[in-house]
Image 1 (cartoon, rainbow, N blue to C red):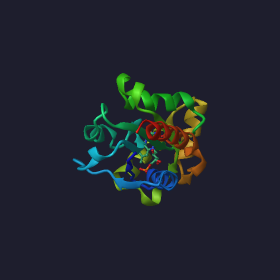
Image 2: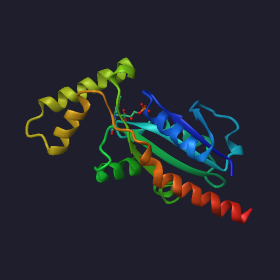
Image 3: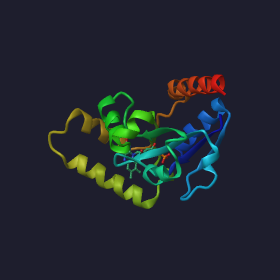
Image 4: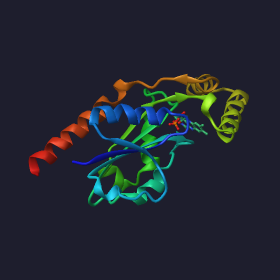
Length: 181
Ligand SMILES: Cc1cc2nc3c(=O)[nH]c(=O)nc-3n(C[C@H](O)[C@H](O)[C@H](O)COP(=O)(O)O)c2cc1C
């Protein structure tokens, strides 16, 4: 079963997860480019991107490169949202995959972090606006308070152990594939 990991990573969190997965799955990782050629030779494609305002960075453009009738697609997203906020994470899935895709495309979320040192100027500006908006808000919910604390400084909550369940799902799929070929 030929596998590949394609990722879109602005500050390195998604790339780091791609590399951890590649070690386990023994496959290549490549950064996402528009009009990727040769992806049709892969049976299983993993796409990863950072969450930007609720959207998985690059996923919408990437979908055009995959034939879901013939290829298995897995999607993972990294973000600053705590892994414990399952309702928010469920929304990432429904915001980024159509109802039809949700039936066939496994979606995983892995907590990453914030890295102001490697962030582009536009992203920094957006974050500053968000932080100021949260600071100015009266009667903040506990979630907003948590978000304000989290976004005020760089942090790294990425952890190799988070990929465990996804790796098991892929290995099981691979076993079925081997038995049938
Ligand atoms: C402009 C911007 C918007 C973001 N929006 C969200 C968001 O809506 N939810 C979230 O959990 N994290 C958000 N983040 C945090 C990123 O998703 C997080 O840093 C991610 O791990 C980045 O991955 P990357 O470095 O591989 O691109 C945002 C970051 C930036 C810079």
